[in-house]
Length: 445
Image 1: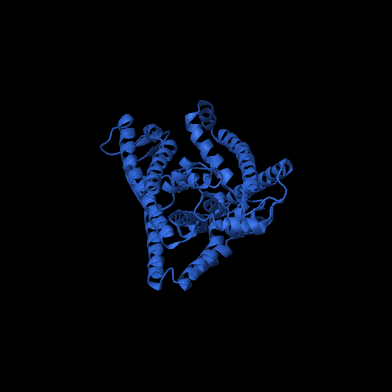
Image 2: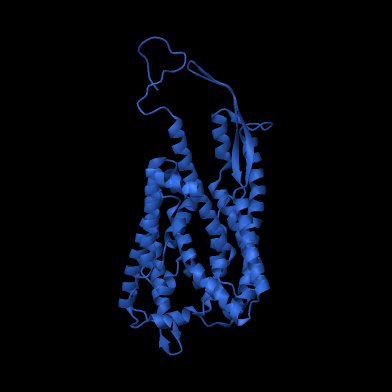
């Protein structure tokens, strides 16, 4: 481990990327504590202490505590992530966006611009919802908002939308100039920020006798087991063998090659748990604002840990896993590209049969990956309900932390490998003749 840090520090480009990422994280964490005006924070803190198992508790985890602080970064990176997912899904369903996507680099740049515009729309809607919702919140007879009205609503919309746009810019800069995916790193940063306070809460539960030492030990052991399972599955691949026929291009003859097509077990990532958690928390959150007998029954039935909540959560995770995989992975396109490149799967005919074979394998992998996501996320939910464990030790947060950490480590290893190959390659400017080239003038490589 020490050797890796030394290599990172010695590589100028990688060192700059790591330091830039850390600097952007520091800027983000500083902005979390810049307050948005018009709120009594003491009353707000009292109100939030009662919302641990609602959508507010989950959103506060993703925003790194910015929602509880009601800062300018309250919306965090979630509007940008939501816009990215929606545009990505619509680019496969809407003909206009699909044509734009097929334009190559220029089309992807246009989709990125559409994502930014849609992020602003989502941020305006969410900030206005937060403003109107806050005006209804009270603890006893004390209102959370100091001076309700349109002035407060417009000020909140401008402040939070601007904060969301700045966080979006931070994420894009971290992706371009740093290490890893910037949006994912910002979410992980928020989760890490809540871990110390969650550990302190677990220690208080231990002191009060609500959790004994044996239960605490079993909880920690279970967490390590979950982390091991996540690493094992996220690294898992189904490698489909590929065979390329011999090709003749000009005077060159390329011999047939053997390769493989890697398919991840969990091809949808953490998108299904995030979407499923958000939808399942809607009834318990809506019950905080609307008084209706039917809604009260729904709120009680879909409370985290109840059997109806667990069943609905598992079903939503499986549905989103299949839907997201079907939209982002196209067996027909892969089969067509293999056919154009002269590649084929042994014992499978190119074209339609290859697409059907890939689709059959993908359905099996997605089923296993969806069940894995549901198990990882639902079992810790039972611990949250039974022992009062915070969200930060739930399966969704562990899945995000481990998945993003693996991605960052993979990018650093790729950078180190590139530096290693650069070290054994011919120095820049050295001219090497092609094999078999005779005589004086000729092209250099």
